[in-house]
Amino acid sequence: MEANELHKESDKYSLTGRVFQRLRTDILVGKYANNEEMKENTIATDLGVSRTPVREALRQLELEGLVKIIPNRGAFVNGITEKDIQDIYVIRSYLEGVSARWACENMTEEALNELEEIIYLTDYHIQKKNAEQIVELDSKFHEAIYKASSSRILDHVLTDFHQYVQRVRKKSLSDFERAKMSNQEHKVIVEAIRNKNADEAERLAHEHIIQTIFSHTTRGL
Image: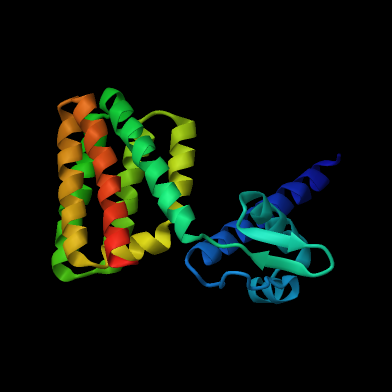
């Protein structure tokens, strides 16, 4: 394969990747209704790309279970069901615990200071009732712990789970009382990690996600 062809191939896959991420996010935030058809021509026009990267992105989404492609009919949204959300949170509660446990062994002073700064900023935005910033900081908090676990696999799986439930997270954290409780839970997790108390860090991280499930169930988000 010639160098320019390699370049074109690389460009094609990076473009497909960008289209995939965009469509994946649109599905997860509820832009598309369940069972809605995702029309290649419309998507290609909206994104300013050809149909090829759209078709390839839809195939990737089918592998993830977010889209169902029916021959001679088209691609239709599977979406995330209530059971999917419950399953993700239960599985995530255990993996978050493992992540916090491993973070005790690998967390640097710089990373701990970053977590404490995130907590401080979250408190500020809760007082100001800035829901968007609260959700963004919540993501940064969890991602910092995933990274500190020093497990590429765990980081990848938990980041994916985090994205899958982002619509629920946004609704949950827009309840400022729940956001305040969540940030308090973050504080005690960081304290356990700073003290290298792996058992406590794991327990607290697990319970933090369980509280989110409880909040989701009782509020019907």
